[in-house]
Length: 323
Image 1: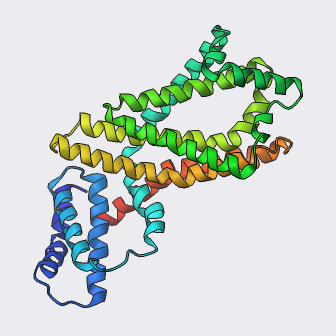
Image 2 (image 1 turned 180 degrees about the horizontal axis):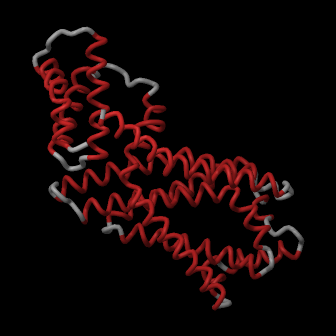
Image 3 (image 1 turned 30 degrees about the horizontal axis):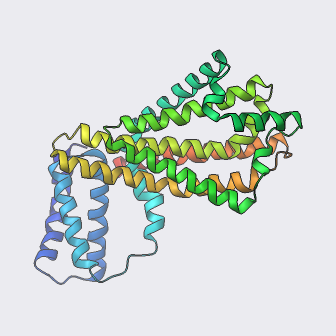
């Protein structure tokens, strides 16, 4: 729907709501609640389809005014957390799929670079992973337990340590976006080269399947949300590079807020990945079918939440507002 048609279709509701707020007109709680829900719904729609428009700025101002008036002394609903993850964020994220694709392609490219470098330079793996890790893994392979590294510390300690470290990497990927997105690309490149060389190392030792079925139990979600965090950093950086109709400072703040929202979405997934690495990956004796089931389920979860579901929500909102 064109912006003008969208505004014409809904302006009476907007003006009525604004009049109620500015003039303290008494209306029934149900009517007030209904108007507020519609306004926030329209705001989400405008954020997706009319970024940078006058309509978006007007609705955003109206929403802020409503929040100040209605919720000034009211505790945020407990369902807000659920709504953010099930409705607000997926619809919001649908407009940033291009950044997600760039982040993914960057990671995939440099993972291949890492594998190629490891294949052509015998010392490259040691340079990237360190002599200590390589020597330890070679010893584990000789002992018949190549994935023993995942069994060296207790489940809870590994879970907490890995989760905190992964969130730290995601924060770096996001915050380095301030360097005009190049910092984010560097973080993605560094981690991708590490993954590529790591997998080639096991391939070279004849352990590709054994390593893949083990590390991707947790790595599917872990690496995927690092890529999502990379998209957050690109959103942040692009806010500085491409202000559009905003001032550069406004665009900077907007990019930072949007990127941070994307980053926040990854936290539950990092917790899941940390749990899998701490409590599940260590069971290298599990049958292949179970490992494949976990990896496949993890991949579907990520693809559905960050790609398929946002597209479905966007199309649903388009249909609703076209009627």
